[in-house]
Amino acid sequence: MASDKKRLEQVEERVKQELSRNPLWKKTVIGRWLCPYCGMLAAKAKGQTAVECVRDHLIQSCPAWRGFQGQYIALKTLQNKTVAILMKHCLTSEPGWKIFDEHGQWYCPYCAQAQAVPPGPSTERAARLKRQIKEHLYHCQKFDWGSGKPVPMEAMRRIVDRANMIKRLQPQVKKVLVEDQRWQAMAVDGSWICPFCEERIKNIDVSTQFLRCETAPNLVANHLLRYCTVYQKLQVRGKDGSLKPPEDLLKVTDMIQEHRQSWSETPKLSSWEKPKRPATSAPVGKSSGKDPSKKLASEGFELSVKVSDDQKTTWDAASAEEGEPVTSDTEVRRARATKSDSEVSEVVVAEFMEEQEAVSDIPQAVGEPGSGEALVDHKTRIQEQAFARSRRHLLEMTCQIPKLRGCEFGAMFKPSENLDGDFFYVFDLGHGRHAIAAWEISRTGMEMVPINQHFLERLSSILEQETRPGNVLSQLNDHIFNSTDNETYVSILLIVLDTAAKEIVLANAGFQPLIVYNQFRTPNLTEVRTNGIVLGSDEGALFKTLLQEYTMPLHQQDLLVLFSQGVVEFQDQTGRTFGIEGFKGLIEEYGRQDPSYFLSMVEAEYKRMSGDEPYPHDLTIVSFKQM
Image (cartoon, rainbow, N blue to C red; front, top):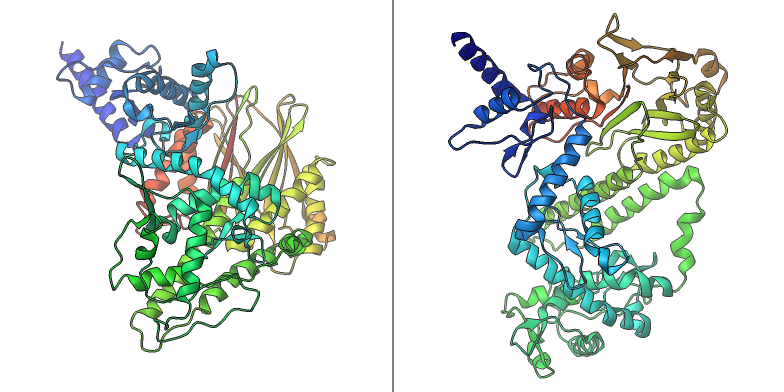
């Protein structure tokens, strides 16, 4: 009895440790613990603590525990079980999982994104919907495999109501975009100019008839209902007495244009005058301070917010915002497509600089308190938006992790806010062979994104003709050296994996060494270091002389890890650098598990070290294991 009691205490103490430090042990589904050994939910008796619940499950019910020596099931299998359990429970009992719009689209309770039901026979609609929901949850970051926080029901209802209004407004928008020239006004790059607020909306392209009919209506309706301050203030009283945005857009447009023309002769509100645009600018009115509600009320419109004396300036400023020159020449918009590959980065940077110059052109009244701070905040906001777009574009370039027989892949790619130049890609070469590449570009920030895209395309085209890593890197070096400036270099590790032959061939041009871990090898961890200098540093002869290829056979349970410099340069909140030894310690501790679990533990460690601070460097890790 004493020995049994001592054993229970030992198991309970170990359970406490794992629950506090191991993310895989923290998985709960519908309030019950999900076992990482067998993938089953632990039963919880009344009055039991969480630790006692886990302890009893391991000792009494888990067939794969084996006294903490058992193998964890694959992380993907555990995630699949989580989704299946949640869907079975929540789709029948949780109201937040049963939200649909008027067109039958399901809304995710975590990210509030609409999911359309794939077409097919009506008798199979429920099955198709479940498959679509399951596919969405696999990729929903806010779902976080059941650990995410759902959107409140009230917020979900508002989102769905707005989506319904957008859908109802789209036919009217499409009609005016095709028939009314005032709705076809655009800037030099083809972006749409709203006839109400006269803002240039960069993400709405109306330069062709196809775009005006197919893609623009939804985006325009979304702008009107969510962002257009002028349109949002105009409301029509419905039959039920509620105020709703007007749907007769032609009538509203005529009214707004009529009032702007009548206001144009009134005195200016501001003590300074904005510089006048060229004569080719879109028609705009001048601010007046008049309240348009009286005239509009006679036509059946109401203002949803009463305009007070100190609010009239805000209304007039919105209605008098200057537009940009318009043009019907769509070739100007497509000028970027004619640029050569070497000019792409300059184009992107130039676009960003134009945005900054546009902000610096905003006039500032002398002695106006706080105007300088507002200008700085606006510039900062533009920079943050530009970086966010570049980061989003970079993430869109990433590849799908392949599923290979006898080999498991995993990858972690966390670009920092500054975009340090990291990237990776896995290429399918056919016949059971894959090329795995991880690289780092010397250029950082927004300008690295187009350079990275061009480099990725070039590498892909070379691999279609040549698969020897040394020859591929030599051709890449020639291209980088001859087509870029003296400040652009690329360090890269390229591995060609042959799953049939169970071997790899690699070449390293100045990148971090490959790490190989196997608990049954001696030593169990090895750094594979080979000669090679970075791409673009030499014309070719020295590069080819120094570059070394290395062939290595693969053994069962070999874990291969590619990692970028930011992984070992990571610092915690006290300023302590993680270093190569710290990273190798994580590999030795978790390398016997599958790559997905290993990477989840690495990510958990970095999150613990950084706290709430953003990652200071790009973090890129690619791992694969021979099973």
